[in-house]
Image (tube, rainbow, N blue to C red; front, side, top):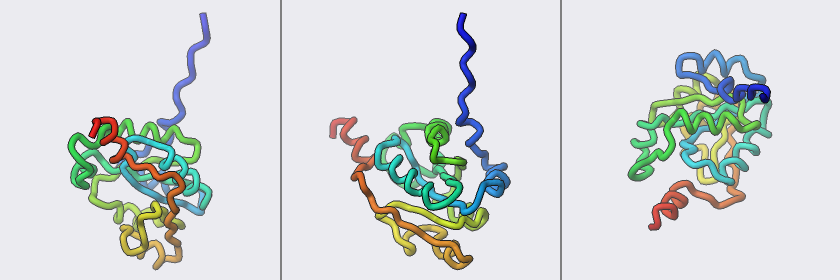
Length: 164
């Protein structure tokens, strides 16, 4: 008879909408914040998240709710993975300190409320196209667009899987 397996550790990294701000407030600073759909995690995502985490002492990843993803127009049947599954996979990454869901079209309100020191997006974003960037900069934080090292796209991957 073998010993029982330990429980997974990632659930401790998953916030709810109601406890998100308190949990974020308890994290070490400087606080790095990013957001996205993260539907099918790929090499581009994990490289980006590792680089984002290197910019501070804690990394918060805000994840679009399923309904928010549908409003983004990512395509039929998206997200492929539901919010709980996407959050669990992100939470299992060592570089991620907390995963937070959001239901709005952008996480601007969450960004303003948690006041990150560094707001990070991928290289296809700029201060002008990133929700919350102006507010973070106005309070003394900074915005960083991380260039793509690995050209990957979940939408392209979905098309390949579907044979299109």
